[in-house]
Amino acid sequence: MRRVYMDANATTPLLPEVIEAMHPYWMEHFGNASSIHQQGQRARTAVDQARETLAEFFGCHAAEVVFTSGGTEGDNTAIFGLLHPGDHFITTSIEHSAVLAAGRRLADKGVSTTFVDPKPNGLIDPMDILRAIRPETRLISVMLANNETGVVQPVEEIGRIAKDTGAWFHIDAVQGAGKIPIDVKKIGCHVLSISGHKMYAPKGIGAMFVRRGTPVEPIFVGGSHERRRRAGTENVPSIVALGKAAEIAMHGLETGAMHRLAGLRDKLEQGILTAIPGTGVNGAGVLRAANTSNIWFDQLEGEALVIALDLKGVAVSGGSACHSGATEPSHVLMAMGLDKTRARASLRFSLLKTATEADIDYVLEVVPAAVERLRELAPEMAGTAS
Image 1 (cartoon, rainbow, N blue to C red):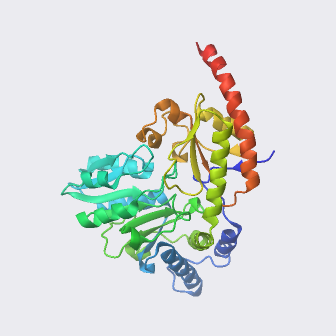
Image 2 (image 1 turned 180 degrees about the horizontal axis):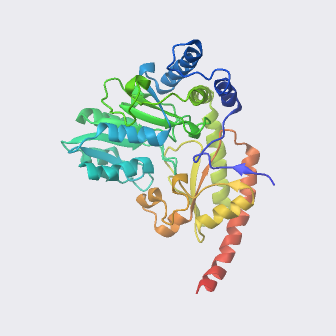
Image 3 (image 1 turned 30 degrees about the vertical axis):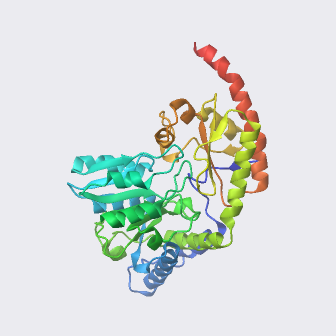
């Protein structure tokens, strides 16, 4: 059976070039990057080279790059590392759980949080951020691209609001990294976090941009690693891999790889909407990450369609992988104003950068038949339940 993976926003495979780059640092060059002997210094050189690459990727100085274990750590570090009792935190209701849960926990630490809702198209209105500002507002956190809909947020406008009001500004760029050019100076953020496994590097590695002079308190303490901003022996193979993945991503952005991917995404959407009545795109009409489409299918349960497609070799998801198995509908879609029935009937298709026309053709062959079959079964299932 042909298999087509369309859940890249959950995780991506390692690219062959990434595996090749990291392989020597498992065996031959295994040294601790903090050691002063030759093996250690070889590892240190590799870490420094990866840091230079990430600095180019972010548009910052190498000294402003901090390696982490991934997006959750980066988000948590920015939030817990900048906020103190009495502060006010502004974020949005469509953020990843790493930000939302952190905001809720802050209530126990004397920090109040405002969750700004999006417009029905999934965009955050910068004026709603401005209206939420208080004298004690210390931090604003907004994602670059939404993990479920792909909607790209107006972060530059929000960055200007943060600057004008004196608030720190954090960007969760996990789903935007490698799909959207990142320029931290243009955005105006103080902290930005990414995750390796969303951009063809291993799980368990990530990076942060921390603007020089931003007083982020580390949440991991111990040694003097990462200029005392993140204690712990460096994961050299994965750091090298992330550097290589960032290098490949920059090349892809320069050569138009995302334009090709957006074309495939659009073909998928148009094919589904043309072939299947009672469908629509969540976040249509606004700028989205090139690989992401979130489509609703009326008169069925999204989870049933995920299973039906998997049996036909197509891997998609009903939303964020971090909420897999949750009984509640997507918090993102609900915040956009969808009712529970339509939110539960929505699926996310997120394409790998290696996706082909043949992949799209196969999915367009499988999805209509699966939807038709499930809709035929729906009245029967309802009758059985009664």
